[in-house]
Length: 391
Image 1 (cartoon, rainbow, N blue to C red):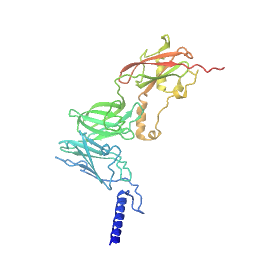
Image 2: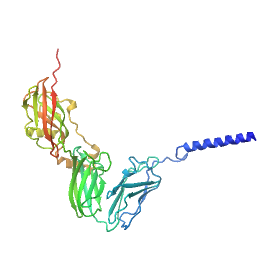
Image 3: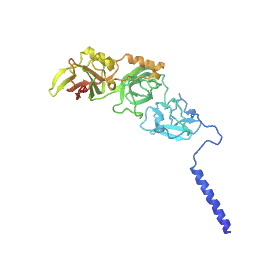
Image 4: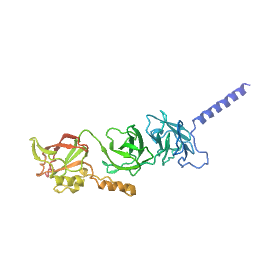
């Protein structure tokens, strides 16, 4: 009997150990089964797009053909755009379904847009790269209206990809949102007629909000049937640009770099002063205006007219291009638009009438405006290197 009891206890212990091992095991494909490389398929969205649903109280559901992960990068909330934008969005995961609803409930007599953005993944990290939008009404017909346009990142000189586009219906401040595609284009259709304030933002942290120092642009419109606009985004700083660096490119040319982009066109006379030290005698203001404009437009040290000393490699500007985008028709539109406006730069060049003195010390005083007209005065010193001792 004792031996039988011990045998029973050993069997129980083994079963317990097997149970623990089974509980800790990872989920894997069945032995011999084919690996899963297929992204989840969106089977249906409830309700149907175009539906008119008086008194609607249910969730909007996106239904998939397999279990999807609830751990999307940044959370499932980042994959949903709901317009008009609610005070708080509730997104629920239900294995093969994602449910969406404003926490305060659906408004009556409103037109809703619900967009599932690319990024849903299954349990094996296969990613769904397409998006889906439905439009429905909680009272009244859905109008046939369209807002279209292109968002240009003026500072970067490129199309603004995944930029945030907000259309604020006035005076109720109902906000309809969408994002640009890889070419900077956007479409916002089937929204109420009326006056709108349209805002665009380079949403760097992807939080769906306009933050301080993010590049923006805005326009007011009256929407009757269709409206189109090109947005030129840039950082709206209320303080002016300051000098961040100065360097002598050759014996007659100084390069000044600022903390912000400068407006295209003429710089005011006297905006830049070069003072010799220790005696603060002005040796020259900025270039003749026509020459300054040509240097700013060129944006390359190799085009500077003086050849006394070669420009240092580290001081040369690098043009930022995107060959992949230039190959597409949509981005060609942005490329064409960029040729119609001057390129922004945070650099000015000053050409002197007399040579800089080797070993000399100079004070650069700048008083320039940014794109909003805000002016700031700043100073930087420059020490000219002495030639190497030939002995």
